[in-house]
Every structure is written in structure tokens, then in C-alpha cells.
Amino acid sequence: MIEYEVLRVFCGADGRHGNRLGVVRDGGAVPEVGARQAFAGKLGFSETVFVDDVERGVIDIYTPTLRLPFAGHPCVGAAWLLGVPALVTQAGVVGTRTDGEFTWIAARAEWAPERTLRRYDSAEEVDALAVPAPGEWIYAWAWQDEAGGQVRARAFPGRGDGIDEDEATGAAALLLTAGLGRPLHISQGRGSQIVTRPRTDGLIEVGGRVQRAPEH
Image (cartoon, rainbow, N blue to C red; front, side):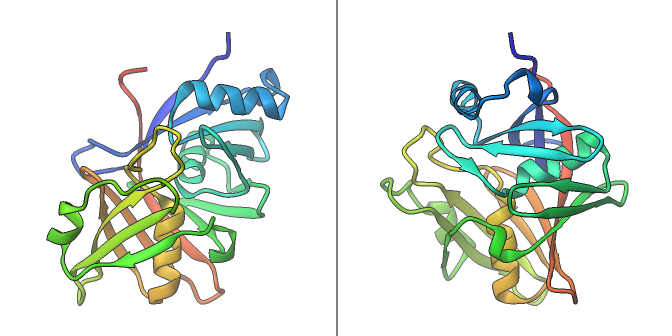
């Protein structure tokens, strides 16, 4: 039996919501890529992380059907759980820090998987969207308060793997921040909160609150 933990990443200020993340702390218990992919598919979370070196923060990330070199909410969750200064992903070394409330990662926009960033005129339009047909990974967003950097967003992976809407997506938030070139506070899904900051060295910081999921 494979032991794992479930976290909720990018929780709201009230501690609710956030995107569920499966974490297998002992990645050596599932050494084969095929077995990891099968387990991630069985869990059915938008992402599952296997930790291959706790001290160095080496992680391996999977959706229910794909292996990912980098993803935002798995890195934020793993950083919170492991408490390491950096994570080693297939895409590169991801810096981490915490400010007491938020756990932050620092990554490059080019590491993020391709996403279609689709802007709408209002948050109400984003709220009213129906789940589109599979085929394209869409990040729908609109300004709630442009001057204040407040964004309303929803994410539709379009993979046909049972995740019709992603509750909180760090990689898409990273791409949006890189495109806009400014800090953002993103309200996504049912009530998840993502904060971002571009840095002068070309990295983008993505942060949020993390909690253990009470149902596991």
C-alpha cells in the first residue's frame, strides 16, 4: 500500500478551498514512471508529487495522465511540506521561501506548460462560463480591480482526464504575471487565492496558503 498525504494549496483567507495535491513523501516506494503515473491516475487529483530526495527537495510531478517537468501548485505544496530552500524539478531548480502566511516559489515562465490565456471583459463573464469541450488548456481571466492588480480567473485543463476545472493553477498564474509584468492577486475557482510577483532577475514568484486536507 502506497502511503501519501493530501494538501490543499492556494487556500482562501478563511482556510477553505485550495487545490488538492497528493504527495508521496517516500518516492522510492514507487520507483517506476509507469507505476507513478498509474497511482496519480488512481488518486485523480489535478497533480500528484513523488518526493525522491527529501533533503534536496527533488520532486517528480504527474497529472492523472501526464508527467510534468514543472507545475505551480505542486511546487508550492511540496515547499510547504518539506521546508527546504529549493526544489529540484525536471525543468530546473525552484527557489522557495515563506513569510509566515504564504509559501512562495520562484520559477521561470518558460518552465510552465503551454496555456491559452483568454481575457474577458468582466469577472461576471468569467463566472458565467461553461466548461468547454476538451482539447485546449484555457485560463480564463478578467480584471476585478486593474489598478489594484485584482484578477478573477478560472482554469479548464481540457485534457479529458476527469479534471474539467482546476481549482487553482500556479503555472497559469505565473504565465499571466509574466505577460502583464506586474504583481497580481488572483481569485480562482470557488475561492482559492494566488499571489504573484515578478522579480528583477527574470523569475516570477508565486505564493499561497497551504493546509493539510482534513478528509485524508
